[in-house]
Image (cartoon, rainbow, N blue to C red; front, side):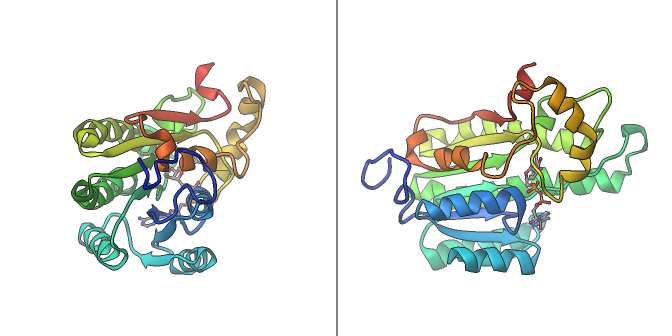
Length: 256
Ligand code: NAI
């Protein structure tokens, strides 16, 4: 429930809230950070890229924290100092992510490990650190940016075992955290995007776009702006009875 018991989505929906968005210096994270800021949240951009991260933070009148999500001490210290400085953390979006394409039989162990460390362990570290703050406040919303790669695989690729495993793992983590923390006022959900143009996805999109056009119910790649509505919904009290869910934003790709 928000302070005014309103459940609408407008430019006051997140007024007074603090939202921490990892990997929001560009791409999907930046889109989500912008949407939360537009709804009134104070946004903290956490990214390993100082140039892009600080640019987005200053655009949004928010704060920038330079860190690598795989650094457990760094994550914990950053979350604690954000909570101390701003007094609260209401929303955490675990968006930072990387991928490595390679057939499973030749996947280098260090690439597998780096992807798992970033996409899954990084999200756990942030959820644990922010969850401790949220448990004290008895409120919070955590949104994990998973992927349709955690729901399905394709015979003709893309093949990215670490990425697929990390995103499926993130879905399990979403349910587990939702179950553990639901009674304490914290909701945890995941967004599973289909394909959206970004630095991470463009090489794969080149390969899969013909299939998307041939078989998706909505026969195109996702457009800029098509993820922010769900992120705002899940961040806000308009979704106060939704937890533990994995919601695909994929033009229907996973139903056919
Ligand atoms: P991107 O490569 O444009 O952005 C990723 C951001 O995360 C960058 O700002 C980067 O600096 C940051 N980052 C990466 N590793 C980090 C680390 N160790 N510590 C701190 N920051 C780190 O990629 P995109 O596409 O915006 O991806 C965002 C999320 O969306 C990822 O979790 C990705 O798996 C997911 N996703 C993307 C899809 C797409 O089609 N673009 C589809 C499905 C999921």
